[in-house]
Every structure is written in structure tokens, then in C-alpha cells.
Image 1 (cartoon, rainbow, N blue to C red):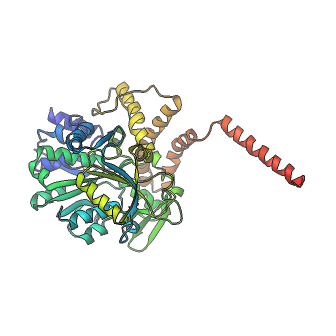
Image 2 (image 1 turned 120 degrees about the vertical axis):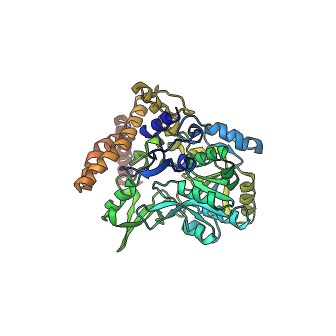
Length: 465
């Protein structure tokens, strides 16, 4: 039954490539990048799936869900609970004031700042987080043990990674660690700790990154081609290049080769619309945790009125661990953090699109899977498709776009023509975009209103009033 479940997860596309099963398999499972540029688990010849696979895989459907884990970790600390962001002590929107953290970060600089505070206070000896690599794969999990290492590895990476090698280093090197990851990775590490006393004792802080979805490595390749560069010659990529004085959401990407660096503005880049879901992992279509509900603190972008206009970037922060609450409040009092207190509903509002897709959209996808007789892991969201026709079409197209993007890009690369990829994708994305345009009646009414206002203006000017 364990082998059968493992095969269902991998064959169904639900493996997120986190590496947790590999960390428990003693070499029986390896994590490899497939031909679509996504990590997935593979059973080695003679390898054995761990008996507790169902309990440690975040997409097995047999492990405790985020509600149960939240109850276990945070209920006793006096935290409140919100249906969309999970447990919380305090919620904030703001940025780091001191020492250049904000300038070096994707947003407000809080993650790197917090990791340095944990290190300075002697609460941790190292950090597991994603770092640039000079290898075939541009990024991987690494362990930072100094402030300089932590700070040099700031920023979000929209690139596949796996954690099995870093977790192996944690086993070899005693100490206390913080781990940074997207929600499914943080859940996976929490599940691993429940069955592994050594990991429970060593990974003592979990920092969650609010997540829209994971991208395959083809996203980076695609951006390189859009910049006029050869993806095979790419040596580095900065996915979050701030572009002052533009708004925070209007950021760029900078792609480097050995000879030059070229920037692209994401708002002007076909495929830069996160709602399209280009190169999305299939598992992300069946995820119901946006904020990172099992993390000790969750950090993302404050896509909110009053903050998104600031090109320098602003974090939204949800604290759940009492020690982190203490660190934040002390820094606020001393002026080192420019944090405003916000409520849980405002945090949810900052991630409205993602949450709607992981609730309403997920319910629709589950219902579609039921109709197809397709197995999927049990979720907190229940299957349902009683949605307005327009919303159903949004989710149908979004799913088709994410699926088609992998195939279309492979075809385009084989033909050596980026134009072929965009040619294949445009019918779907154009149909998707039309769903977000006002209907004909509304457009006509707006046009008539502008015409009437213009006519009145002309009459009053000619009358000399």
C-alpha cells in the first residue's frame, strides 16, 4: 500500500520535489529534475519507500492537514485563528528600517533581518534557505552560518529546489537551525519532525514564504529568451529587481550570462501575469495553503492600498511563535522595524487572488477530478462546481494554461523558436484576459459617460463659463 501511494503521488504529478521522503529513505528515494524542469521523487532500484511515507509527504493525503498541525503547534500559545491565514498572534505590514535589509530584499527585507536576529541572540546556529549556485541548477538549499552568508542569500527565487541534501547536512552537523520555505516545504519539515526526534530537536524555527505557486526551471529559461539571451548560457537570475519609482508590484527580472546582464520588466513580459500560471507545478493546483499556516512566522508582499505604491517594497507578516513576537515588538519599539499593525482579514486581502484560487478554484478542480475518476490527495476544501459560468471558465482556462505551457515550451525549444511558444499560448491567454474585461454593456455605458462629459465640457467652454 505504501508503494502504491508513492506511485500515485508521483504519477499524478502531486510530488512537489521537497525531498522529505528521500531524507527518510536511506538512499531508497532520490530527487531528480524531470524533463519539464521540475523536481520529483524516484524510487531507486532495490529502494524501499519509508513505511511512514503517508505521514511525511505533504501531498499524500494521509498526513495531518494544516488545521490539525496548527492546533498542535499554536493553539496552546494563546494564538487566535483565522479561516484563511490560520493561527496568528500579531499581523503587520511594514519594512526593516535599519542597515540596508530592505534595499537588498525582494520586498521589505524582513526574512533576512529576522534570521540575523535569531543568530545574534544565539537561538540558532544556522539557516537552511535557498541560495544561488554556480552549477547546472541555478539555486539549491544551502546552510548559512554567518550574518554575511544570510544576507548574501536574500530575495525570493522562483525556481525549483529540493531539501534532501541540506537535511542530510543537518543530520551530520549537530546544532539548532531555522528553515525558510514555501508552505508545502514547511509542512513537510513539520511532518518529518513528528516522526524523527533528531530533526525535531535541530530544526526549531520555520519561516514560511507566502506562495502563489512554484515554477519549473523553464520559467527562468523563458525569461532569458525574452531578454534575448541563450538559456544554456545563463549564469544567474534575479527574479525581483526593484524598479523605483514604479509601484512595488511593477518589478523586473535581471538575467546574467558570463558576458552581460539584461533586465526585463515583468509587467511588459508575456507570461509575467502570475494568474496565467505558466510553468506551474501540478501539485500547486491541488494545494490549499497560501500563507504558510504551519510556519512560526509567515512573510510575503503587502499587496495592499497604501503600501503597494512604495517601490522599495513592504512585507506582510504573520507571527505565531512567542519568541518571534517578542523580537518583532522590541524592534518596533526601538524604531528598527517600520511595522504597522493590521488585522488578519487585511492579511487575507493582501493575498485575495491566491486564496480565492486555493478555495473556490480548488473546489472546482477537485470536482473536475472526481468526474474524470482521477485520484487526488485529500484536502480541507471540498469538491464543488456550483459556480457562476464566468468563474468556472476562469478556472478551466487557468488550469489549461498551466498544463499547456509545459508542452508548448518544450516544443518551442526543440524548434528553436520562442515565437512558437507564444503563438500556441495566446489563444488561451487571450480568452483568459477577456474574462477580466468589462462586459459589452458596461463598456458601452462607460464610453457614453465619457462622451457626455466631454460634450458638457465643450459647451461650457464655448459659453465662457
